[in-house]
Image 1 (cartoon, rainbow, N blue to C red):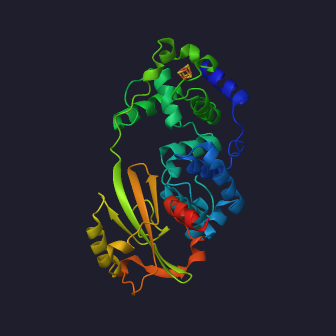
Image 2 (cartoon, rainbow, N blue to C red; image 1 turned 180 degrees about the vertical axis):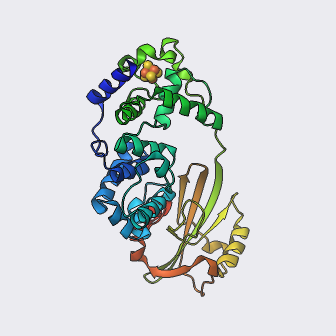
Image 3 (tube, rainbow, N blue to C red; image 1 turned 90 degrees about the vertical axis):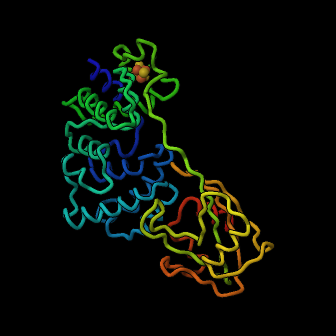
Length: 349
Ligand code: SF4
């Protein structure tokens, strides 16, 4: 009965979203990757841009990673964009352009974890596997009054088993969509709308008035502070940029030369480090910040200070980092981090 109520509620009340009205695994995959750690309102324009530029997996695979990252720009978590392109190429080259049709095969693809594999397998191929995202964790913890923390290995196992028990095996696609939609629109983190919930009569937390304590989470990692000192070196119409090397969240994005500190450096040590890193001697008077911006990432709080210089002497860079002088106009066509993008907006409008 609970299953029936949940699905009927979904059919009548769900939001119409372009990736919901399809069984095409490419469209579903694209939307799921874009929507990870992203709100629907923010992800929707990106989904539309991607579908317009790449209506199928082969067109995505045939474009360059640089163009894909440029389109991804602003969404954050750039490894998702890189993996998207990598997997499109893999499907195109190794699987003749066809998506695998089972959870077991889908999960082998780069960038596809348990949640995304379950979403594609159930939505596109009606395989009876339960999805488990943040919304589903919340619904299940309240519905079953499960107090195990959702962000521990043991907690994940318990919730996987609850999700699997709760799954409507004869209609996994609609069931999975329905429970996710319930979490996104009714069973909200604060002030859930239980009076409008189709499964309230069987919800243990609701009936015992214990909703506010659920789901339980173990305390998060401490967010570290970092201090980025950026140098916008200019010569005529040209500026220096470099492509970020392998490793780190901004891998393969372009950036300005920078020095990173764990604590605010003294002016003297900054001057010494500029000489070591870029081969130019500056005095304190020349070191005037041009722009300062705070930028928050999941585990890092960045305070970025930007300087602009027309260096009088030849700059000397470390060879490992592939610095190059390029026309400033070209920077706008390169994939860059959200922080660098904000700086470009500040400088060029
Ligand atoms: S009754 Fe309330 S707490 Fe329980 S599942 Fe529905 S919205 Fe969530």
